[in-house]
Image (cartoon, rainbow, N blue to C red; front, top):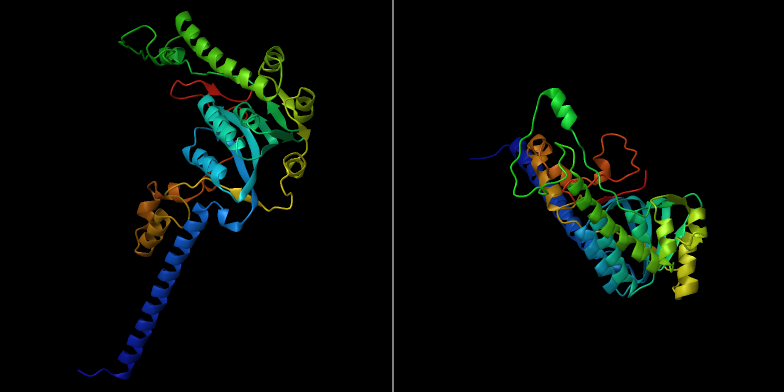
Length: 332
């Protein structure tokens, strides 16, 4: 069977198209591999540097972030760490884990903190884990304390004609409950938990800021401070921003202030535009299955969190602990 001239031309066009898409697929795969390796390296391939770590939003127990901080401690190219804070606080466990990780890091490298708009409660706990704290005059900081909140909707249920029955092993099991007013015994248990966490918070403030415990207690009544007030109260060390923080690293720790400042971010498996999820999503869309995946959770893992917000939020106090753990947020 012989082919006419049109068929020959069509075959050559098809071959060129296939070659083009094979090259594109190869380049995408190569870019994904190189990008993943560079991202996982945490910028450690770029030579001596000052690492910048950002702490923002609600502070929870972030395993990826903790792993990154431990990696920073072992990376020889990182000569110092700058912790950039802009957060109203978070959970007590989240603040504690971040505090402990930064203390391990500070045992091996100079660590300095800068507070931007706000660095309160668990975020202030983060700041005192560093060697030096710099804040703006109008930054909001402090809010040293612990808070536990829970809803009580028994009156609402009564209005709706709904009652809740329960059978439990002991009176304090699952207390306080949102379905009835808390007993005095239940309130005492929660108060004991709050006091225990609060005492630890006050102890580390007194220790890290070189304050008498009585003075730390006076400052730890939940109030917030401006940066200038915090400086007078010895809760921070200096007024300024990143420039002043880097200058301190040079004068107090002998760090070369001309070193580049590199951002370090936690490596989160399965996320990012070059992740397996992202590549799978792209292939699925080319095959016409994109809308099905968009309705699932793949897109949630691919897109950065800031691109998934669908409205404005104005948060002063972190959310309460939904699982019964004490929740620590900024003062009200």
